[in-house]
Length: 121
Image 1 (tube, rainbow, N blue to C red):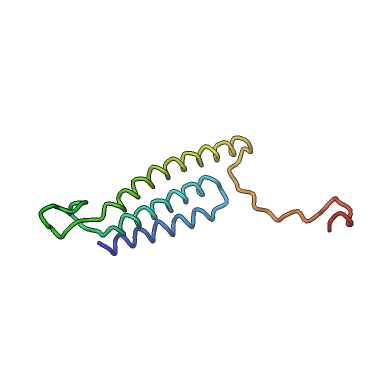
Image 2: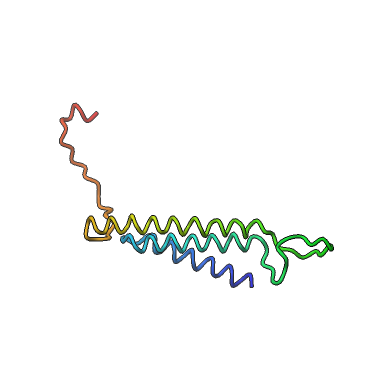
């Protein structure tokens, strides 16, 4: 089971990084969402992958329990990442409607300067 979860985290991370490096805004938003899912799965697995165990200690002295803190962290992270994804979609949509394209312009910087040489220093 650990191999499957580790593979899922690696695949989501690789896909997220690939999409973030694209030059369009929508794939960047999807890449950030994939990275947040990868982090959520990683946090969830840090609380020990156990099946059919209680999330708290039992008063009867059972030794098997899972840690509830990663579960609470993942639940909080899901809500936050959903809100941030909605904000990024609205910003991307606004940029698309403004420029009629969702391309990210990362061109060479303009080195020409209109100021006289004495003011450049």
